[in-house]
Image (cartoon, rainbow, N blue to C red):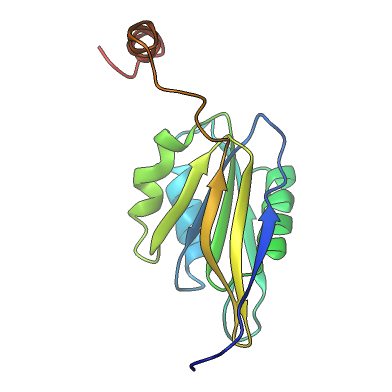
Length: 165
């Protein structure tokens, strides 16, 4: 409706520095079980917790995971964000690059806002109808452009950790 008021809440994702976080949007209660199955299938070593904000019916924060601490923390973050159909995944002993294709392949997943170990703030639009994620602030701004030595260091790092041959 034209002229409707909107405000923006900034919600900081609370997590220890050693955790990675994925924030995304989905569309169905089945997301919780399907994301759980997708994550379990990536690696037997992956520790995770996930939570999903239901947007209709009882409107609960649904949760699952294989690590109780991470599951509780994911649910607390999803509750703080409070936006319909938003999901939060917290990872330990794995990285977003290892799980993103599996997450994006879940039929209910509409999109991923971020996948990072950086500090994250979620920008939430608030209207009379509810709350919706409109973006994220992921880490800090650049301090400059890479030099030739930085390029060489980046390339070497990717080979050292096994992502490039």
